[in-house]
Image 1 (cartoon, rainbow, N blue to C red):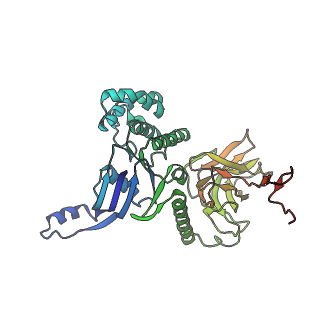
Image 2: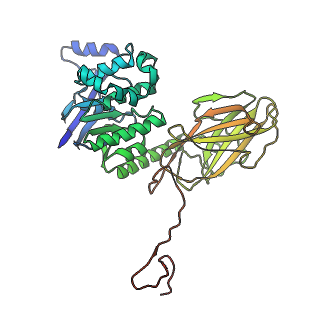
Length: 438
């Protein structure tokens, strides 16, 4: 049974250069066109069967949210047809449908009533909703005091407890913490088992592969691919990697950015700063990653050699400098860390104005395909008595590519031996990996 059917759906928006152009167009005797058409979707066709988890991937601006809004009935297609059969719950925007002046409890009743539940039915589910959201006493506070994560917790809890036949999820899990994400993914699997149809939009390829039955890849509003998760995710990841590589090639700086690495070069750029703290006696002035050929890289293959270069500058005396970095995954979990003391490379004392560049030569393990970030730091003294001089959260990111797929977080090198007892052989096991001598 088909829950959602799209046939040649296109959606365009009128883009005006100025606010007065819309009025001029309306008042023009011949309705002279004063806008240009932006096509968010072009000729998109697919069917979603009942109980299927249908995932949608694509870059920002590719038309994913527009597609979900058409499914939800918020938008009408410009051309083509979109048919939806079943009770629907949607998580399309952070806190959409919540009144910020109402308490969490009031919003639970408001949202559930919009979805067709009466007060008695909501009463029966209220305790389960509150338990799943797990926001404590904030359930009695006004929603405008909530963090983004708390809003998503409550919105998701309501959506999954009102017995939807179709659930739309647009990146709602991206702001949840690790524990909530695990509960949410388990709940998605439970809904799948109960025959709920799920449309799931995410930039997390791990989540897509974990829950998806099929994947639609949208590129500039058009269908680029549609099929099994492993195949579509692999093609999409390869395309994004190629695009990023071309971007880095076009925007790489001159003067030593390519070719062999200059062991004395100082890096003086920090691509990103999410948060920074320290006493300021020394600072990180740059971080960069290079491959074994000396080329700057932002995408890497498992097993590759990666050079992480960190340059620091002392503003004051630092008697026992320690330079290092923390590698984090996309959930913000510290995945790996090291520093000069840990690697048995003590540094000389630094004086005001001194600049030091440290190269960390890493042999990368086979990690799952995802984005990882480096957080560089310089401290004075070894843990646990170290004083942080400068720490920068998520200063630089790399994308890990993996073929064949990694199941879990990391693939350990493994040697296989097959021993079997064949019919007619003696009691000794026969190793099929050894030469039996004919």
